[in-house]
Image (cartoon, rainbow, N blue to C red; front, side, top):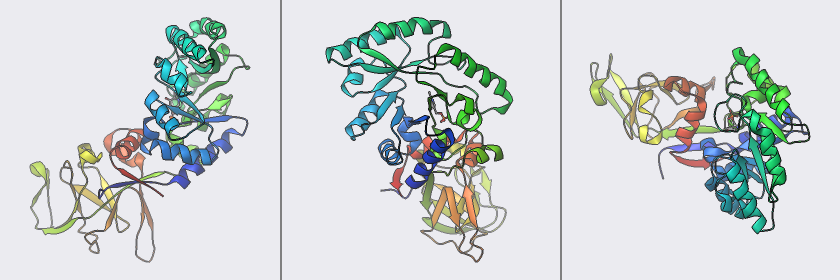
Length: 370
Ligand SMILES: *Cc1c(COP(=O)(O)O)cnc(C)c1O
């Protein structure tokens, strides 16, 4: 029980999935990335909703997330990005590891053979990300090993783009895509496209695409063009309530360090949300919230479990009013205008990206599914 709730709109999630599937075409499989607790949206509910929308393949970061999904009764393919050394769990739970290490491959083959099975692996190649994956000149050897090992088969060959969201680097992205195509034949299940590539590089769809952030309704780089390519709806909102209203005179210091001093008689709303809830102290001096469909500035330092909002210009505010920290709210007056604070706007205040904001709010608060 908390005043603060993260609201997850599963209908929007399904719509985003269908928009992506529609864009790439039915001949291309969608490997839905649900790592980090579904980007903060809740692993199991997200996967169950995506299954209803037609999802058949999911990507997690670690083994534990894969086991959670199996325990929840998910039968779909589960690709594990980091964890190919957990041979026994991979076989026991029928997970599909991303591989980049010969010893792991041998271990996986042995464990699978013992059970009279074959484990499907996705071979990761580094064509410019400079992160996980074998180098291009190792691919031939790895493919031969996969072929030779009796307990292993190649379920996919994959790579990852470092800057597909940056239009100025499109030459680089195209070159990386070409290097990848040179490494893997058409007979293989090839996949490289993240959300940014789904929006900007149709040539990179190949057999399968791996959307993450776009499933949750955000653009890797928001722009008019991106919105025209793919119509997405944010899935997460973050809400709290007003727990106290108080009037303070002009010249009053507000919150720790008196960073903020009122310049007029001010009505403050106290909100029971702070950096322990993911509403980071770094938002101090930047953040706005929505109350009664209007924007109000957060003033003074954000505390561990509280912050303060100047509602002098919204005299109709009452104790217990809903406050939207991220999401949309409609005003009660005649024009019923819709106001929105997006994850991108909050990311801008924090000098980060929407991905981090979603994890921050989603993984630190009670979630409700609507
Ligand atoms: C997280 C991840 C994705 C999804 O990236 P988005 O930018 O969120 O679409 C795709 N592939 C890999 C390997 C990833 O780790």
